[in-house]
Amino acid sequence: MTKPLFKRLLGIVSGVLLCATALAQVSIDPSPKEVQLRDGGFRVGPKTKIFVLLGHQSEDRIAAETLAEQVADQSGLRLSILGMKPRGKAEGGAIVLARLQDARVRRFLALNGLKADTVVGEDGYLLFSDKTHLIVAAKTGQGLFYGVQTLRQLLRPAGRGLICPAVGIRDWPGQEGRTVQDLTRETPPPAMPFVRPRG
Image (cartoon, rainbow, N blue to C red):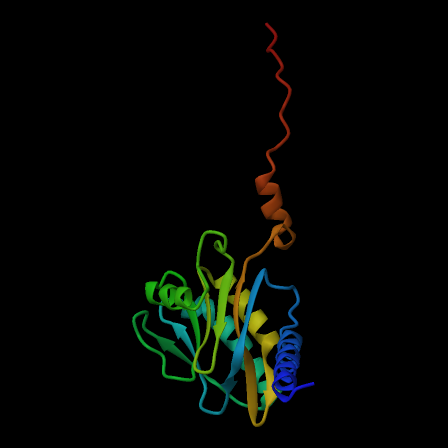
């Protein structure tokens, strides 16, 4: 075997192993509908903050606190939760819990291959992470909460902090995720037989 061919084979094998490692990192239950694996990851450290959009703080605070609690349990880090104006900009290395009503958020996610279309719906979410960004975005507080549950499963210990693998995720509840109330609302009531009044 020639040396250049050996190097090419070694490169292919290394790539396959890296992909397998990344896939192992993205073990999520329930599995998201769409997952894009990328290189690298977002590091959560002592200076990381969680930003929640002002105007949605009371609704989104539960998701932010759940995430902060997970980080504290896994790493001992205590992350601050801060409010952010809709047109504000989070500092680098922050976790942003955003709303898809924000055109800048939608545009940023679309540029990174995550489209906020009608398929995502009201309770779906988009999750994007790379070396400098970690964003969970949804139209509703419920969708944001689902996205944070996925993010919690992605976090892994790394040194003195945690790492979230670089991913792009689009997910939305399917038929299996609906409640009995949702299903009964979609099913029309049985037709009542017509009875002609006497008389």
